[in-house]
Image (cartoon, rainbow, N blue to C red; front, side, top):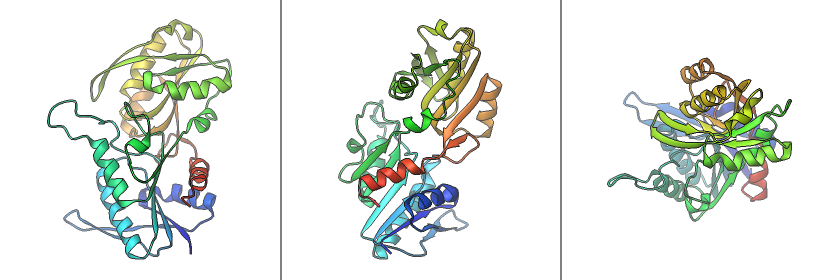
Length: 294
């Protein structure tokens, strides 16, 4: 067997979808958790190329299990071990803002590069870094854009306005709005804390009597989205919807967003959840094949 794909208990369905797209066996990594919290990881077989699929939301225990699984694959004779992490964690902290802070992006990038021969991820949350290769050095590191997939989630009836919640979202909204010939607005954002943001939307009056669709790479707590919705509703929009690559929000936050005026949220299946509306498997499959990683 030349290639085999492994997933974990939290990503079985997505792993199987990718396995079907690649036409390779898709198996589950066995993880046993001891009473003290440590884990035992086992892979039931190996191959020349071993692919591991796992989104790294809630990452701390997942990373340890992935490193153990990668080691088991190499011990079993794998020549290449590839990580497919549709959501790639710890990308926010790309510099030390105060003395003594760890730069998590650098640490995680080095860790992955030292244990895997390739990385595929989708819309990583990069700020001041232009390329994923600057973060994960020395291996093939591929960032896949979900913009074509998100565009299929846009209901363009009645010409809605596509809204980006901050300057970093401009790349997504332009890639999505241009083929659909839709207007765009980009907000400016000030982060006041983990769960507090300040937004301003120049030209917000253009949404009056129209639908607004907020497009971004991710939703976590939903504070930015709710503040954007407040401003858009104040400007007279008919409704506010959201389309994102990664939805990390839990049930409580999703309920709060719905109660705060978000009519709907649609996301890719990068993180398993109730907002999933589009499958990443075809995009990931294409990236693996084009870069000769599978």
